[in-house]
Image (tube, rainbow, N blue to C red):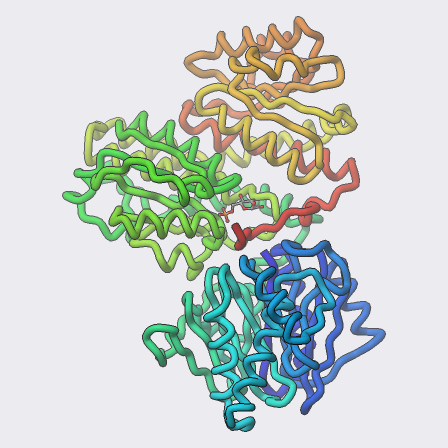
Length: 620
Ligand code: G6P
């Protein structure tokens, strides 16, 4: 949520700032802006709308300078407008900064600063921080602090941070101290890129790819004092830190669109590979189990676990629901799936034998991070199932399993979902095999998992059929998605995909529960998407379809190849390969991703950048 970039070195800053903002645009696209410093002049350019619009503005009104900051905004306080766009200026222009996060006590601070004579030009919480830094700087200088010393500016930032309640990732420039960039983090991620006589700043590592492969992830309560040639990191409690430089493995080609029109479509079609990458090297044929390098728990500790809590948000939460079914079935351990936003404030009884997994693509979702921290604080083994290496959740968890799905750029998550389901299936196998699951049953699971990339390839052949179906239904204003057992979470996920990118109201429901409410919505204009592959309660789902048909609701069915019975009942069928029940979600979710994509295209929506959403939600 909101993307921050910064540069300090010898090159024109605006090149990296703009490119970086393009790469971070998935974090928010309500407005964009940069500030570039040259001597004691800081030029600010900012504009409502996408980074592309900022680029146009910069063509018409260029800026020069070798250090600067930039921001792409997902609005929290104050609507998207030029005035509310970042960077914000404090005092009389002495301070210019960008911010990601939420300042909860901004209203009180704003009144105090207004009483001191500070004039506000925006409705944002960020402008409060800018004025406060300017105010603290003025106070320091009045007390005789050295205006030429970096320490004076650092102190102004430190004094400001002490007064803030909430979260922040900050990048700050000082008009009277050219050549200095200060960054600070609490709750909102920041990465410093280390180059030769230059440093970069970014909300995540993606803008740094191609510029440098040396990165330093800032931790909460750390402040970075950055010049072209030096990087000093200070922690609020422990003082000066040695920067821990890591090597970035991402390459520029990972985020290229290639032959695809949109990232979402590219990522849907990457699923045969991303699923394979999720199990590659983790299947142990000899012992008929899964192997993980990073769980950091020994078999004795794992055997003691008698309950698993999976916590996540959005699509990752849906993957957790699939995981619940599979883990309970194969490992016979009770699983609960908790919305992280609820779990972080709830106080459910959890015994010392409860293990917690945070499931997250980005590794930065604020609620998931907070829920994980709360569980960790209570002493539970807290692990992550995460895609982004080096993300906050990956670094703070006691251990975990990476998805290895490669960067997911489309705001609507697709390949991360199927990779999460794959990893949760591996976990079910692993936990099952240290408990009740037999050797042959473990072998069967392994053999089935190996077939999945091909099954997904076959599934993707439905794309043209999905296009036809999308053309038939894209004008509908309501959709129902219905499925049972393993395919109930798939129904939820299908509905979420459609809502996110086509802005059509869609509800996912367990098919039988439909009778307790949603059936009232069924009419000739409301299509119901039934996820009905062959399963143990297949005839029951067929009865649910009959109920909808009796009320003249159009039916789109996702069914197994050769299922003629479904074809008789449904108006339109998308066939998928037959796989074991626990593997069906990986297969049945794919046509639903494509359906949402095609409908959104026909409705003229921006599939990769849907309105009001952001890929990485780093605020509560
Ligand atoms: C946002 C994204 C969703 C994602 C959710 C959780 O809402 O738009 O696609 O599922 O955050 O994100 P995470 O990175 O924690 O999986």
